[in-house]
Image (cartoon, rainbow, N blue to C red; front, top):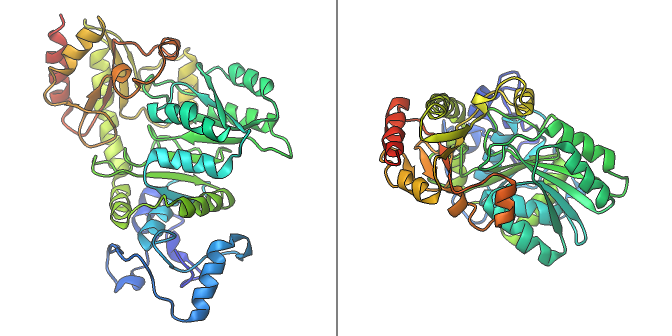
Length: 426
């Protein structure tokens, strides 16, 4: 947490244990809070210094991170800069990610992406990214970053040779490869190990190519990339990390050096996450494994039901991949489970898809994902409505596609609900 305990043993009191155990205690020393078994919420905007000398030192360390020695960090100053709840949840995220050195909490997933890019990239830099990505990310790449002379290029296939073609074409100007894996909502996996190798191959002493992975769909339970050579692991914490559809948040994890740059930029632009939201995310991280396991078990059952349904053309879900499919090989290499997200294509188009959506009762017609409740939506006309027709066609995002984020309800109840809704288009 902060300088008041330089040993900082409580950042990870049980390093010998698995992440699911370590996360319960990580980041919090009860001695700092009247021995409260659980962290309190620190709602203060400002913190007192014991001495004027401490105040001077804390500001120096906060504004000049290059002057810090190992294990040294600024004490608590002001909650736009640092707050105990922010620091606790960041420490908890680190123990969930082997290989990560540090984490920064942000007010949303999109804030985590935009803050990281603006902090680490410069005018003239270019980004290569997997397509499709979340609609908000796509809009940022196309309409916002261009104002800062940062331009992006989409790859519509998981084939690595397409990434290499763009790296050759824009050699010397590419600063980041941004991967969302699996893609939203088409559930396509990208070979992260292969991307890391390409980034190293085309990096130069003057310009290292950063690899950033949006790990929202399967991490941190079923995908862990921080020890696989990536530079930034990014999350919308609104989803599985928060897990209850009652908060908005984001994270980025990486090296101490990169995260410090991002945190400094975060403080300057005011991208601060409030203490209560941080407290909620800390609470939810303690149950993320059991929640994601239950959601995944349900999703597997539902996918197996849908793939046999007469009104369903096809289903995209990692748990249905078979040997011989290139996607199966990538999935088995970098994932330990299929997760809760699936997309299925019904027989018909927009009219039939909307009829299904209007006739579910247990599933909830709403965007977002990763909550305890099952959410159902229409990507082409909702979350990804701003994508061009050309990009939708290239990524097989049609009007017949429906996306499902499976929750923790009884799987049979969800199956019955979907079956009744699908029969309305028979």
